[in-house]
Image 1: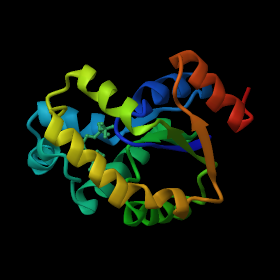
Image 2: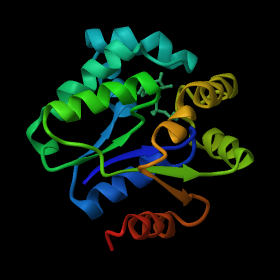
Image 3: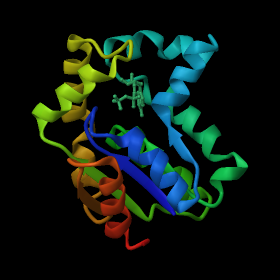
Length: 182
Ligand code: ADP
């Protein structure tokens, strides 16, 4: 199963991606987690991403796509994956299509997690990550609306929309049911 999760910051992509990865037996690939791991190890990639992450801006497509290309080339991703936080722009989506096509693969579905805006801010402020200050949260949401929301239209033929308000377990079940993988 080759899956992309999309949704605004705070939609619960990370939480659901971990659970879905287990259910579907494929690796969870989070570009946010990969960037944070690089940052904490002070790698060149981490340094390249640092100021963008701290400001809630997107890291360049070039850096991000390069990182994803390497991750998807690892053995465990051959059987499939759940991408969380990537693609975040239409250009990244096009780059992903090319990567998959070169290997004779394609996406099975794009899952959109739907959550009303007021619930999102409350969730993010409760999370306490270092880039979860109010200004940075607001900027990440603007970036989502401008850069990432167009993906919903871009992926309309693959899109599976799931109501992501409720218990964590219930939302996972909704996704699994919507994918027809139960
Ligand atoms: P959230 O789910 O709260 O939006 P993430 O953990 O997915 O946060 O991402 C944190 C930061 O990492 C983003 O604000 C951005 O700076 C960077 N980042 C993550 N994924 C991408 C991507 N696909 N393209 C560009 N930057 C990214």
